[in-house]
Image (cartoon, rainbow, N blue to C red):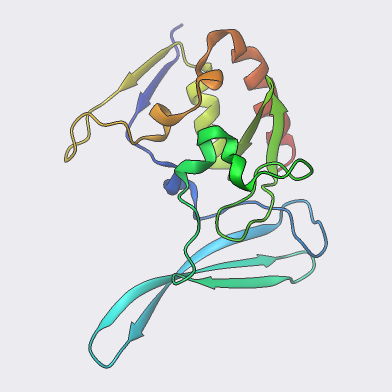
Length: 176
């Protein structure tokens, strides 16, 4: 049976509604959630719609908030070079809003395999286990290289690493 993966243009930012990270206060096992709340700011001249990034730990009640004025690193940098600028040897990959270590990360094939949440893990799993990978053109942009599937690192795409990557994805799923 041929397992097929169709790239519908999902981007890394499509998985940012909920990011599981390690709590800086209690080191909880990933009960932190990143929420984007729409806010309306009204100036004397104009009103605009912005967003607030909010993290809260369900274990110890730690909370932190960031407005859209404090911009994070582009999410694309996370896949490129394993986000070496923000990488810490003891924590691995950090989220690009608050700089907290991601909960779902593990060493794999000499690199760091990571995901924001369960939906992101499922996306990676369906991509890696597929034997036929199809790309479809975007309705507005046509053929482009901005989707998450097209931006995955080469080591994840290699057939020789398929079994190991799938095994590590299963280990990460058990952490949920």
